[in-house]
Length: 354
Image 1 (cartoon, rainbow, N blue to C red):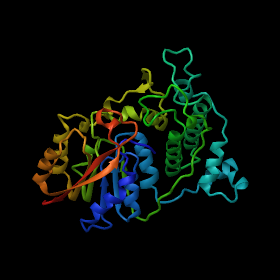
Image 2 (image 1 turned 90 degrees about the horizontal axis):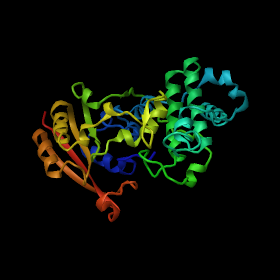
Image 3 (image 1 turned 120 degrees about the vertical axis):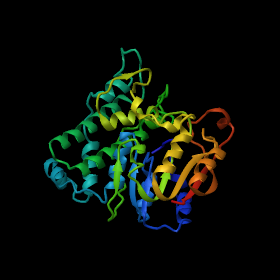
Image 4 (image 1 turned 180 degrees about the vertical axis):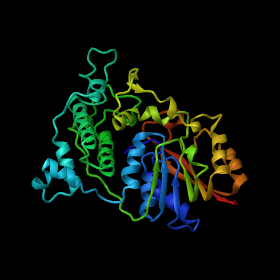
């Protein structure tokens, strides 16, 4: 999934930073989980994962990838829908995926508010999805919720199906990268018929903990080997950039407004997006949480200056800084980004003296 600050291409470098601490298989806390890519990676490396994010769609991904330790069997559901008889050579998930992909679209919240035909006659015409795909999202999301209410799927199966939908939607959304705006003309990608994509399962034997809350609420409870921080870099809040994924995940028929059909996000704002509170928040984490190593992943163009970060972290132990050239997020078109294709990702590694 494309996500601002996604660390998928930096995972090996982050692992090198963790390996330099000589910690293997300990407790790794992903403080701002996002797409959960970092947590998934370190889960496969044998770490026990604690992860959290304020956005519910991120929590869905965490439940499916981090907390879940194998492929669900969907025994009760497959018996009900008869998929086991039709798909003897499919995995249980693929049988359910096939069933969902063959659903007929319905008029629901996504169609009514985020497609061109659904919003016809309204103040704002929106083109996030084609009519077909908007209806398909509604059909799949409604069916998943119906199965949950009828207890045909358990909690684990529910979050896996919901995560598979969340992961598939970006392949068909008529956007340039984030959901803060839609394209005026349909991108060829958006014209394809939506299907649930195959899903990658991350097996394991350790118990992992995931949370849907402001991570700052966890700092007094943390006692980990590695505390990994990947906060927002600038003043742009994440919630409005991914409001549509949040709405699909919650499917709560929220009050929306404006050209983009934005849901309210006043309770999902990060203090790291405010230059007046970012450093103060970083220091609170470094001072309060219990950890052997704190690793901060930050952008060289972020609102917290390098010298200030070093000053704050340096109060709590020895800090090493690693700079990594990195391709910038494509939808970022502010200032120098029109001329520079790369930025520097900065990894601050703090060894606690506590």
